[in-house]
Image (cartoon, rainbow, N blue to C red):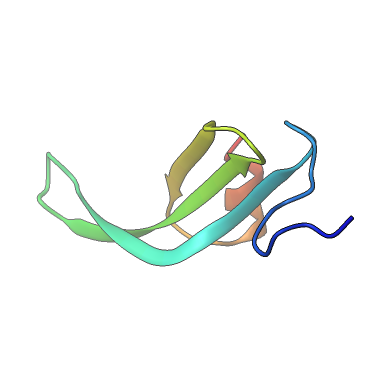
Length: 68
């Protein structure tokens, strides 16, 4: 049976898609006024409306380990 184009055959909550968005956001330190760019990490469960996002200063491995 062929699936329509763009349909994901994954069962509900069977897969989790994670990646950095590629875009950054400006975060301002309230005390100093310093503006820093942060990377956005996003996770989405297949076939659901559940999403997770978190900002981190870099896309390095130590930052990825601290996202949980």
